[in-house]
Image (cartoon, rainbow, N blue to C red; front, side, top):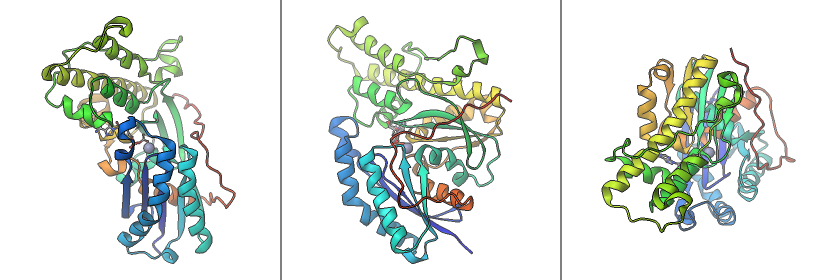
Length: 354
Ligand code: KG4
Ligand code: ZN
């Protein structure tokens, strides 16, 4: 019998709901982005975000059910993001999920948002080969995981400072490009020369050489400072210099390339060390075409089963939450009405090298 799970996501600036059948078939996937509300602040304002979720959650839930052709009593469970995220935002989705669970006597499943990005590989490719190397790169997180089996992911490394998307958002601000910065830089970079400006590829290195686990961590704040100094001189004391069109295009391309290079170098190193059979990407930055192109070109990485999920499964969505709900329900990992929101992601242990 088909098992239908409703997934609800309100951890950041997307109000999203989806119905997924048997953890594989996306029956509906509705996302309302609040980007226009946060544009003028160049970042997500928590109070504005949670208010907007409150206004949107019921119509989005209704649409997800209507699009799927499913009535609430026909659902088998409700899954909701309860971490990590802004508490006021998480509470909106959780209140809706609890109300539905209570009213229709449905099991409630508590999902970690970052783990949902990691497991998106399974929605995009049901024949995913394990272990899978998964990169999650968004505005809030940048980390690599080794997914050894469903619900068995270990974190290989994470960012020491800015997330990759945050670096793109801040870089775009320095270049006078709009928010969100990732897509703006991608557009500006299309005709640009990526080798015109020499920007650093920040590599975190531990003291112990390549055997040091720290080698799998990322760092992006130095890259952002290099761009700042390039524009305003050392120490950023000079007024910002006016950029002509070709300069702007070339700077955007050089900056994007530095971010992509940093991600690729760490992925290649992790592939050498942990011998995954597949590689998957998730999070908003995974929408980037240059990143996708480079992954398909890099010999070490293209040799793996490469899973590049469609765009609307990369950015925040309810389908990935429903998928996690499916996996957790199979394992009997049920939550109850005492479920609380948590700001931080699940702690991830370090994987031992093969
Ligand atoms: O996963 P997401 O939608 O939200 C969270 O941060 O959780 O990711 C948003 C981030 C932003 O930093 C945005 O600039 C970046 O993803 N992004 C992109 C692209 N689209 C969104 N970065 C590079 N290229 C893109 N096409
Ligand atoms: Zn996300």
